[in-house]
Image (cartoon, rainbow, N blue to C red; front, side):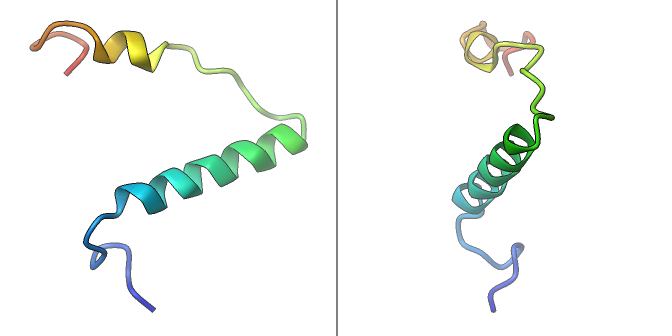
Length: 51
């Protein structure tokens, strides 16, 4: 089994994990909507909250 740190690209695995957590919490009725719009934050200019 390959460890997380040894993975050449851990981002997809992390996203899979986060998606799984979202599905589990939603199924249990415990899903909390995000408090910020990440796409909007990412669109901000460099050296601001966007980076």
